[in-house]
Image (cartoon, rainbow, N blue to C red; front, side):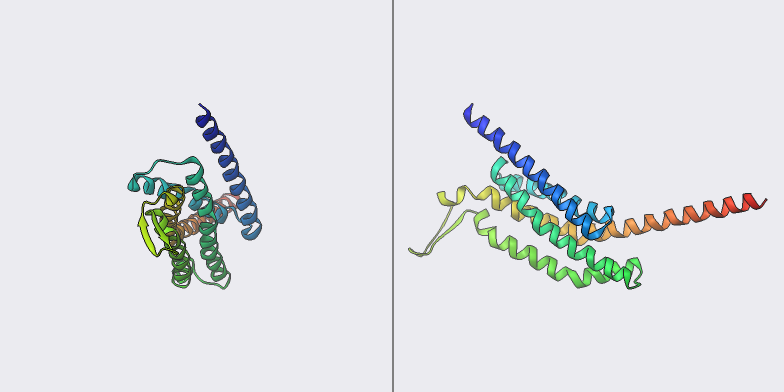
Length: 206
């Protein structure tokens, strides 16, 4: 009973921390982009990264640890937000320079694919040994797998490895597709508005 109470308290605290982090990210992104669509794209990538975390736990056969897995999800948010900011900011800059939407998206992916991948790969490789329980003893020069010292951090590192890997795929493929879909929707809405104005003008003239 006491363990369940502690787990419930930890879960409630992490939910509040995650909600606070999301709200602060929302406020900062809204101040930077001044557009709700861009903010929504970034936050959706953060939320959808939890799918990768859950898939990773299933693949590795690990339970969902409220504390360490929750911290891993929150830790992923920083890298995911940074990668999406780099992508969307480059797209917005190219659009201001007069590029067409499709060409701007292709050029953005060409320019920013390497920084996004390198950021994610370095973070994943940094915690990958812990995810597989690899422990290195520098003093005795021994490498062991499944050492007791690694058990506490396996859930955290697994959440980072799979969540960040899944979010990187979203950043490189889903975010550009979403940008194109938003632009197509905006053009379609403008064409509808123009058609309605033309029809209204003709009816008024008659």
